[in-house]
Image 1 (cartoon, rainbow over the protein chains, first blue to last red):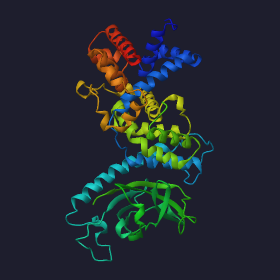
Image 2: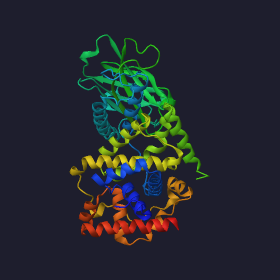
Image 3: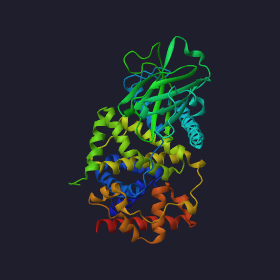
Image 4: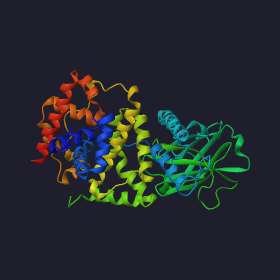
Length: 256
Length: 188
């Protein structure tokens, strides 16, 4: 093919941008592209114009787990605040443990939908999941329909799990723990709310029974609240920043 | 491009700050662009799990500076969408054997959304472009379908021939004639 023909160059650039050039034709075009600034201008021309197709597609909000996982990976690579299970020396390399964590989060998201459905189905009768319904010391006020979020956090490779009910207006989180975490040893399990500016400590999770934590109202706004659990020294992270690995994470979903 | 809209300016600023390792800017960039990118990835990949994977990998690449923006590459959102689409096509090339091509019924709509309802699309139009829809409507229907299926579905010439039930040579000439008319119209 003659690459000096203007129309042909325009055409090939358009086909390249559309993704129609494949195999040898594509590689040859890319070789030419590196050496030919005029051809690069043709490619940019079509990229910019065709992007109008893309801009016309209705936006779809991605599931919160995508951002949570990204944030986790960014922090892991950036300042090692939340180390991955295997320490890595490469600064720019993609985090090798990402796929398993991703699956955990995806699985968790599915589990959360189940919890949300169950809880919303029971809203007429109770405001909190059955596991913690008997827990609040203060008598329930049936008229106050406070905004509530629920979450189920499970530790992978362990039976330990928590059902959480968040009522930001009352500044409260109720937690019901069940199962076991044999690897706990001399550590505490710390719960974090993930905000746009980073993780904020909520407190230490009980490993059995029911507990209550304080929840600053400003931490829980919007449709979901992102949570994470880290393994910390006994008593929690000393400086209010996570120091141990993220054991699990998940999203609390608004149910009322 | 002299008077880029505020939102585009904002995204360009966020991209620049993200390039300097600013986590806050990265978070805002995600907040302001992820829904557009996810919508596009869903449309091209047609599978939610792949779209989620692609979105996450894409933002990680941006964070790791594997993708870098410069103003001469066009408006920030246009660039973000363009590169996201390339990454989705890369993914399709790897995974295509598993993909059944879109059924005719599921094929992308051949009409265009009202730009008035889509401020970002309008922002790109304000860039002095925005003639694409008009010019597309000037194409013959088979030319138009070929171009749209290639754009939204990542179809190859062979796949287009299969989908449109036409000989390969015919499909190639639909595409070429369509693109040449499109160019003529856009430059008018």
